[in-house]
Length: 235
Ligand SMILES: [Fe+2]
Ligand SMILES: [Fe+2]
Image (cartoon, rainbow, N blue to C red):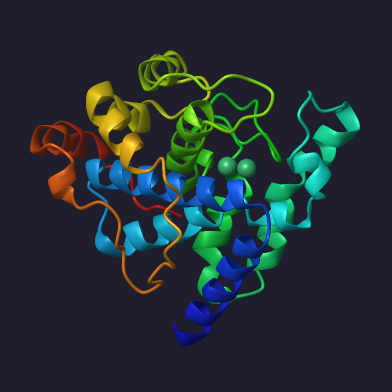
């Protein structure tokens, strides 16, 4: 456990020393994922794995040149290849630590798509680790609404909420989308406003510290948790 915590702390420092937009994106995405995980009824242990994996989902970007991360125009195909490599690179960084196996699985698969058109392995449906399916929704919602995208205007929270709904069963796991949609755009907007300032606090790697169930309506929790009995884990 101590070994895992030390490794996680050093990975966070690596992320923090790189591109600040990526670090803030990882913070917000982890917050969104934990809210979804609570709606999905995940245990505290699974939530902790989910938070760690989602926070580190883009850790592989520390090896991508800054000029690519900050490029204002559309990327060339060769540049996209380099960008897409971050999932495998991130996995390689984490997977040698056996205590981080489930965390690494989320990192590797966070760009897989439920319909099998994602990368790096074109996994489909429930072949994609559950935590990565949660990460995919959180990652996309944050990317769409982030204020600092250089090549495209940010969507409003309502626009992004509608987009996520449109991708149910395509890009995203239907059950995870149900959890997302159980929270109304107005409530997501409130969360979003709270996160507009990057939360630059260090994580406590031994505890989930992000939004509590009190932040999510009990109604959302009841509706969704019944649907996820079959979800065996966040790995
Ligand atoms: Fe990514
Ligand atoms: Fe991301």
